Length: 493
Ligand code: ADP
Ligand code: GLC
Image (cartoon, rainbow, N blue to C red):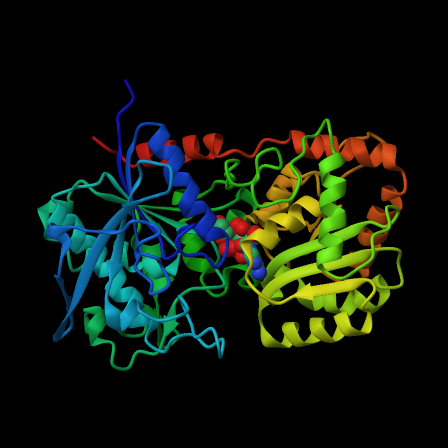
């Protein structure tokens, strides 16, 4: 019989409780599948002020009330509540602390877009609390599955602060990296709250990063195994500064322990046949609902529907990573083509302003919504003909996978998870279900957009493309199996 594993899954965002991007989708869906595979999996996340305690039925856990967490020469208190991932039996622990988490914005101030100045303290506290919670629960997991820099001090603490505690002797750590562009880099002054020894901060020390401190580096050096969210990204991040952002040499040193597992997606949430957030459901055999969704979406954005004109959609954080420098450079030329384009996103102010300016200039063809809106994200997937995602780098990417399921043909750049998941359409063989381009330039982007809208004119071929796209299966089960193999490979008795 297969061994049931005890897995603590730690993440700074988990859908539907708190989400800024794909990490939340992964954290809200992988544990669910692991539980269905009969593993004992529990989640820990911060209790942000915006999480609705009533809606999600958060309850006090007597044992986990007022846990003292040592922060250098002071103590902080973790007040932990618990609930379940909706419609599952996956228990979620919410770490509360009114000074650290009771504010709007998970990582930064939503008004100024600036990171919170005390993020090192907030997520140092969070990581430290997770280990104290386990002790209070008397629950010894086989695996602590950490995600990104916000949790990367856990492997470090286990090998330093908690090294002599036999409670954790059998516990192994996996650190999943979802994006090397975010590492948790902070100044070294006044960080006694991290309980770090002086020598670890010195040049060459395990936390030192060119005179500053780097949470992700500490996690990379100390976790038993490391994973990232696609095979290509696993290679890219060891290769160069461009992808490794200064950590490439450390990742390369751990090459034997570094694995790429492409994300799955949750078809309970993202499925045009059952999606309750879209006006009309549809299947690959009957796309009439998709056409109605396109009409509704176009009207919602204040454009005019024309069945012969393809609608391109983008849902994204507005950052360099997602290709907005080449999109904004290409816009003037794109607007000369027979197409319409709708964008939903929040992010860098420069892109918000530029896009608003273009939307004014090309008000018949381009419309933009600067906000975070999950329903509209679903409507765009369901109503667009083409999804544009020309990322500069992309660890995995989920939107191209949602697009396939909704029969919305993705245009992607060949990098990271985009390269691993989207097969380029080749007219000669009639294979493929997307458009993939290599060169990161507005010129290459424009060329591929032209190719796609040219093919759109041939509706018979286009429908075949849709059919192939909708047939692809990126459900979590395969990826979850791979995670279990990885957990099992960590010498568990
Ligand atoms: P990343 O995590 O790098 O932002 P992914 O493609 O992995 O990229 O995941 C992005 C997730 O965030 C998707 O579920 C997408 O629908 C969602 N998303 C991004 N921006 C918005 C927005 N403005 N409104 C609603 N959902 C958004
Ligand atoms: C990160 C990456 C994205 C990935 C997501 C979930 O936010 O940017 O590519 O899909 O994490 O792993």
